[in-house]
Image (cartoon, rainbow, N blue to C red):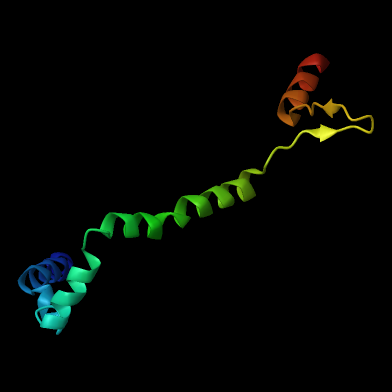
Length: 97
């Protein structure tokens, strides 16, 4: 009984209260003008420009986390191929047995 009382009362209260009660400007003329200014014909463009930095920041975080593999060049200008350390250690353990 005690375990279900709090969640049931929170759900009942949430469903019974209108969110408009918390906003004194939503039903006023100013609130309607603001909503009209936000949700106009440029809304999709503004939303996409606002969300555009998120994939860029995720790419930067991924490069920082996983690293950015650059081929190394030797003194004579040739590109060196670096062996994968997991495969090298795996092959070395197989050759010992």
